Length: 205
Image 1 (cartoon, rainbow, N blue to C red):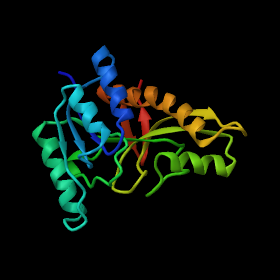
Image 2: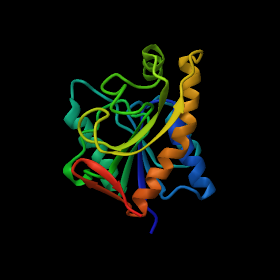
Image 3: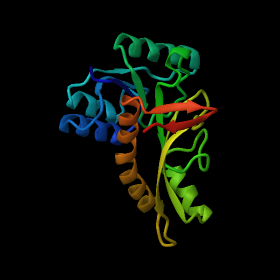
């Protein structure tokens, strides 16, 4: 039986688009059965609808609070019988229940634990990398926990940062890495090859 995937989005949906393309080509280790957006006007919602995928919006409402927001997301994922949750440019903290622990993956466009944390996403990350003078950057796929950009690291991929590179150029290079790394992590999970021991991930043969 195919791994049932839920994807959480907030923006343009480039990572979602990569998953959808791979699923259509038969190279994604699972089936996307539910997409949830924190912004009903996000371009990712249009991508989901264009692919004929179930999509729902759970708008962030400060008055309702983080707990209610996360509960509504969990209800949708439970209803779809999701095996693995993929955070794909999701800009809110998903406070998932214990039942989902070890079943939520995130990708970050830098080499965690550097350049991570609340407010560090998208272009902000790449601008910070360039400003720091770092010579290498990349992406990190990790099991999410209840803190932004924290949790056991599954895999990382790297690329050089040249002195003349702009944030946009770094972003483009990193996204090419993300397109391969995130599906690879999904495949490792689907194959039962990921084991968390002492806060670290062991990739089994």
